[in-house]
Image (tube, rainbow, N blue to C red):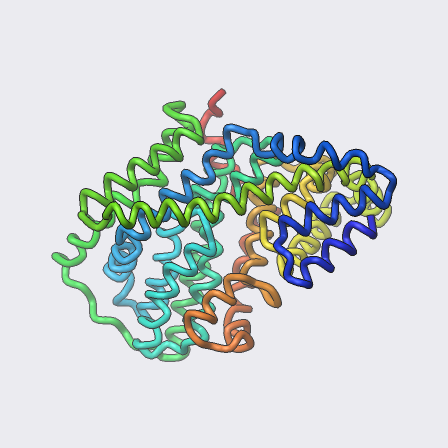
Length: 426
């Protein structure tokens, strides 16, 4: 297996896209191990990897988020959050956290959230007197909520790879998402009081009511998705289609959506979803290589040789995932480690939904963790601040996220309360 990982990381270091690095690394390993004839079957394996009806949810949910973003929903969410908490000490920092929580229920993507909110909120916080590096860090780390609060593209990928119910995973992500909102809000409030950030004038009740009414249709979308899936009204794939239709209706009803913007959203969705599905197709190659060499069993045996205590195994697993998250993006980590993760899930004896929620939060924390945290690079580009300053401001916020991760791993009810409160749909 050394040749596979050697080629894989060498290709990454030279700038080769992750999907090609996975596929080429797998093919070179098979050739060197004397299994070169198997390479001829790779196109068929790649097609089988994406020939799953549930994967239609990815482009559909992405399209719904794109349509709402270009349709002015982002601006309305920010105004609504300002109406709710903008009058607090350092109000715009609280507005940022709350806006990230609301936007997470629409986008399902951390990078889309950081890009959309960063362009609006970082300048607004800087104008209020909040240090730009802290403003950038707050947007970057708060965007972690995108893949946690449903709908979540990362949870869909995890559900497809592991066979876990996507509807249950969506429900399980609600409470951790709210804990992230509460934790980051508490830190933002404390920081504002410590540093004496200015107070934003309080909106009058008429403006608050108007902001609420204009934003309410977008805020109920996650509720429609979750209730619809769990009530058996539609499947996750049909829920994604409903989200697209709903986004179109809202956009045209408010006259913020035009045919040109719809076309631009379709192009952007095609580019993003095709890259995700191409990586998923390459996952079949990696999965075959790992299965051929019995990598999951070997790694599980190595860990058990250190300790058979489930708690120790759980801690080691989380540490490894956090380190991987510093260098790879979440979908790549899931593809590389899923066979191994399934072994560990059985060793630990954790509920599959709780385990999936823990893993997803773990890998998305890496998106805001140096040295290769993509969210930090996005907000640094938006704010013009150096990575070192933004990273320094982000560390306490990342600590809050890790604390929530520990609660999910240690207390099953945190992630399982809502899934157990609804009967699963057969």
